[in-house]
Amino acid sequence: MTQYRETTLRQVLREAASGSLEDAWVYLRESGDVRLGSECLVLGDVEESHEYAASLGFPQEGLDSASIEDCVGWAKQQEPTPSDDLLFYAFRYYWLFDAFPAYAWAPDPPPPHEVKHFLALDFYRNLGRERPDVQCRHEGCRNGAIEHSVLCRRHHYEMVKKEPCPFEGDV
Image (spheres, helix red, strand yellow):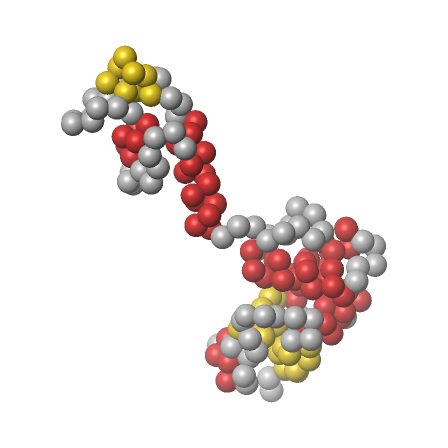
């Protein structure tokens, strides 16, 4: 017989904090705006558990009990007796980003496309200025080459990154 029960995320987190959460996976009804009061399904070991949970109206995979206990452990490092809000914060952050925040109430990390853009811009800026006395060797380019290269910033960027340079000039 399949072992499952419906409860709230608040109750699951409280059970994990008290050490009474059984070995299971937690599934959620919704994937968007998850809150402490969100309904969830605590499902024991079942083959094809995701499909089974979805058939019961809980299509969103949450976390397994060991991961939830790790979230509680992180929260207890921040506060010996963490509030429900801090327990939820730790759960949500880990669930969304597969990592623990640097500190309690840290903002969410930026989306991957923003991180990629920032890293690319940082790389581009660190290439340095183009030298007016040494022309870029890319065919048809009239820009100067950067220090320690025979290419301008744009063409050096494209050579290293193997993608079109999204930047122009000194940004």
